[in-house]
Length: 82
Image (cartoon, rainbow, N blue to C red; front, top):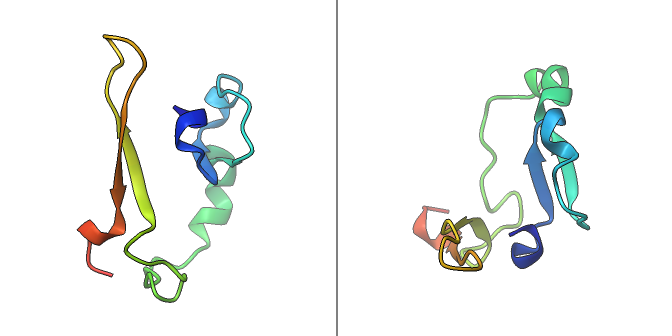
């Protein structure tokens, strides 16, 4: 799924980092960043401030793959207000 979706960032926890396949994505172990994250503002940045548009993906949801290779459905930002 990581290869198929080609993410720019993968969020995980330190205990699972070793189970990830090789990727060009930046891998962030959230549990290793607890203090840094706690110091950030709770205010949400707007998509426009971040340079995002309705064509950017929010996430990809995958089937279980029980009948073969898992299939993904891409969910763009257009489903949410920008």
